[in-house]
Amino acid sequence: MTDSVMAMPEVQTLLTKLSGFEQANGDAQMKKIINRIVADVFKIIEEFDVQPDEVWSAVDYLTRVGQANEGGLLVAGLGLETFLDIRMDEAERKAGIEGGTPRTIEGPLYIAGAPLCKGEARLDDGNEQGEVLFMDGQVRDADGNPVAGAIVDVWHANTLGGYSFFDPSQEKYNLRRRIETDAEGRYRFRSILPSGYGLPPEGPTQELLNHLGRHGNRPAHIHFFVTAPGFRKLTTQINIDGDKYLHDDFAFATRDDLIPPVRRIDDPTEVHKRGLNAPFAEISFDFVLNREAAAAPSTEIHRVHAAAA
Image (cartoon, rainbow, N blue to C red; front, side, top):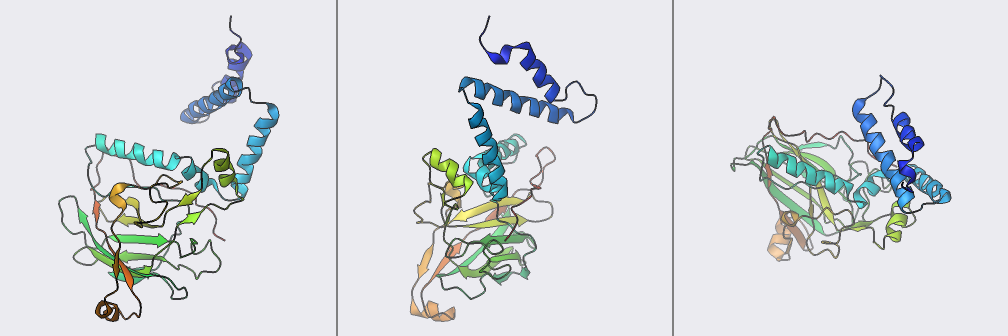
């Protein structure tokens, strides 16, 4: 004899029926997943004695997450996006793929269709004061050969942590470009050094993190997709060294191999060469791509992003 409600025949019948197990049509995998999710929720309600008003509060919370377009932030803040990366790393290892530039999360603020430039680009529109950044590097394969014609899709925040399209004060595609590498696999761009950002303080994601005693801040970072025919798509980002949240990222995206040094250049001759009148920052970072492998899962992830403002 057990006091568990979960063991009651009517609860097990309920789980069978709500999962569609008695129906011939539908998706078999989806049925199993829904059965597991709902059964686990039932168990949580029973184990923690969750009351009906608490259940409806959770339903309201999920509704507010959707209304606020914060699904991507919540997934990052709960570590789910990083877990997917860890799982992909392990799948590649089992498929014999090792090495290459580490992946890390995409985040929710990508916008497709940024202007395509050959070899080099300027990302900022010149309307914002900030520390000028010059970044360059090479895209190579695992054997060290340059990958010409690779596309380096780059996007980052401004000095206030805002992203174009989501921040109405910025011009369209500000701080967003696609750069096609030259014959030696090289790319370069001029921009401004970004700042990190914090979650909307009154938003539902920060509300949950408050209950967990956690902050909602990200260190300054720059996002990249790097693609080339015959190679696995790389989704990654570099962090700006020295940021106070460098190793305390609410989205768990920091990886040690993705923290290149930032060189501050204040030599007047070098400053003049760049056509500037103030010191600037330099970052060099090379991307190493792995070739496609039949046994490895796809790195082309199809996802719906938050709607831009």
